[in-house]
Length: 134
Image (cartoon, rainbow, N blue to C red; front, top):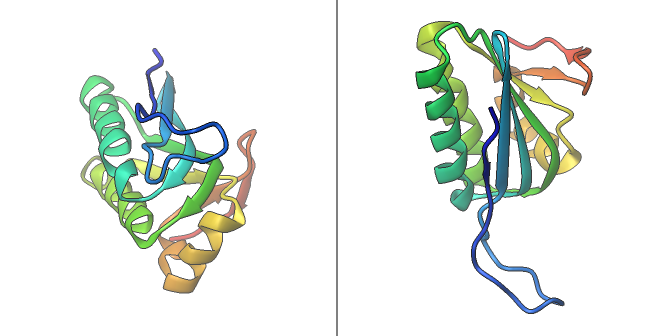
């Protein structure tokens, strides 16, 4: 099962679309949902990311882990921080762990500066845990 949501606005080839929705793709394997996010993590990311996580949580009752592959994230605003926390909170009632996979500096640094880094388990692509956070 895979779904992709992408930005619809078009821009001139030499100028990026400001605040375009990021692309969110997902797969489910056993008790793990893997979401791949590409683009900017801003307020426009809330709708596609929360919608995808909610759909997966409703469809997959045996989930124990949601992995957010953030390697394709180029920028994150304070609204993006809030989206990550919201996604993490969606899984808490069912005991679902939210894991950030290979967060680039554009994601890791704001999380570290705000202290939100400790809310998440951080992992390397391929399943290796880079840091266990509580």
